[in-house]
Image (cartoon, rainbow over all chains, first blue to last red; front, side, top):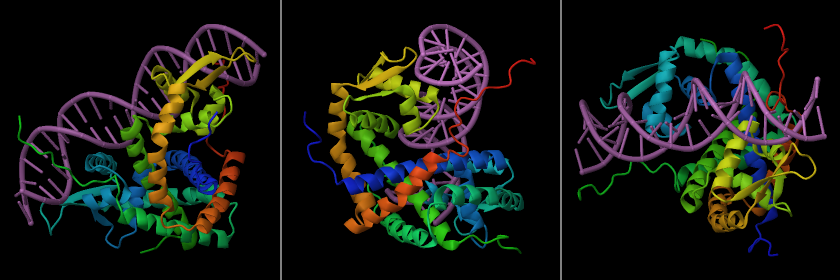
Length: 169
Length: 169
DNA sequence: TATTGTTATACTCTATAACTATA
DNA sequence: TATAGTTATAGAGTATAACAATA
């Protein structure tokens, strides 16, 4: 019986599988902690974190969508939930009347502060426990260029809004 | 205004963020390729791959659930879809009449074969493009122990079936 | 005309609890 | 009694397409 026609580099395969598994398990654990500690999902936590990291605590909707993940409509949904919970505000941008500026509130910052220690504990226990400080450094040094590369070359995902040919009934 | 009360190790933070971002972007791209090339989701692809890797092409339901992800009911759902598509079969286990053995079909193997080249291309282009062979080796060497550690210490996730105290309605 | 964002919608997925059957 | 798996159910999340408004 034939094996795979062109066997894949086992080293890469191992790295790839481990990456998938690690991120999947990590995300699972994080979701659970965030949910228990602050009724947050990982996506909403990421959004709040991204906002909290800027001096103004603000971002445009599109920037958030590009940074975190998805479709604009998906972000509108999540931002709506955050706003409803009083964790962010949305206001028209002064610069561009089409744009909406999302800003984290005090309550949002407080929630981050409340949740962060437990979050870090999970990440520390799960991700970094088997790693030395040097290892962590190495890991960052490997992953950062990958991240930049992925960001630079949006190959299939994140095609900005497509427009169909229109016309023709 | 107070910064974070106990600033986090920036190196670890960088590694953590990069990991999240990389896996998220990668998964997005993979989902897209699998969907276009073979009408597969990543989860179902993983299930088929896991099956294809064993000599018999079989696994018990519980083993699959533990290996890939989730709740048993979630796996039942996904296995049902795979079975309906003719990619796997389900049969009672000879050893244990409670157990169900899932087996990949020829069609399942064919679909894997059809989808795999494109899959590898995406992974190669996105994940390994900025990495030397040595880098890939290093990455695997870092991630594998983490994976094993996470598997060994299921901290919050994957509590096997819990049982409430019962009684006392 | 291109871009920003929202809405409506339809669908996929996931988990919890209750249940059956076997060890 | 504990484990394997399924079912019913209910909710959350996501993307696509259509739309309104501004650049």
